[in-house]
Figure 1 (cartoon, one colour):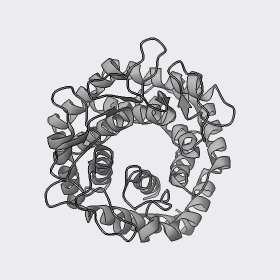
Figure 2 (cartoon, helix red, strand yellow; figure 1 turned 120 degrees about the vertical axis):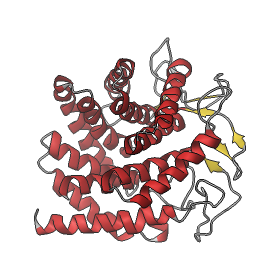
Figure 3 (cartoon, helix red, strand yellow; figure 1 turned 90 degrees about the vertical axis):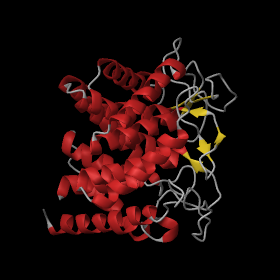
Figure 4 (cartoon, helix red, strand yellow; figure 1 turned 180 degrees about the vertical axis):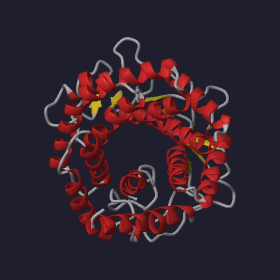
Length: 358
């Protein structure tokens, strides 16, 4: 490594261990799980709802970090998140996971959200990779079956974004979203790493074709974010983080399937999505995805300038990375920990850097 990359690794390792993971570990609730709400001054809102999404992403972050470092404290925190998730978010009557519960684990919002189900699979499968605990993989597989049965659109292909607890259609602004489909691809890819099942493989291939033919093909300026059930576009602000996440994820999924022809087919799309995402990137969660995507495409798609881009983005990001209001770059005026701000994009970015250069 060069002196520049040595410094890069040192800074990222410090940000991950002393900033991100240390901060989220302090949010453990003595009653179980993790607190899910702080005010702008950093005070824990102890009686606020606990969200399946934050719990699942916290489970993933600590499990993934343990898989990288084998530090026992990360595994212990992952167990806290896993236990609370399985004990309180799983709907044993209808299947899937609740959206939110109160501090005592009693259900509050019972709708079934595709993005939440996807992150549940991601967190549980990463925990399985860390521990080989069959119960975590079994529940991930159960949620997969629910998604394929209840969320999949048999007429138009793709997946609906949100349903009622008993899987009936409900009023929602967007019937299908790109973010949910990308999250589902990530979740199914991790599930495939655990079980190597043919039905999961076919679902991954279908999602990759949807990204190629239904999501990206409708626009030359990045992924369209929102759709009606028939895949007609609903106008909305494009999110560069989706372009950048898709850029590395489609290749990861193809590699997971051990399909080199598919990898070669998808490389041009990955590079195009990266180019678009970098061009449109704002100071948000997209920056963390930009570092991840640039490094992965440097390694797997011949993006010669990938390391330079990653270093440039990090130089802008690092000074506000671990201070209270900027530990997550997508924080603006929101409270530090809320429904969409989690130890997720940043943890992955840091682990990607450490994996490549340590």
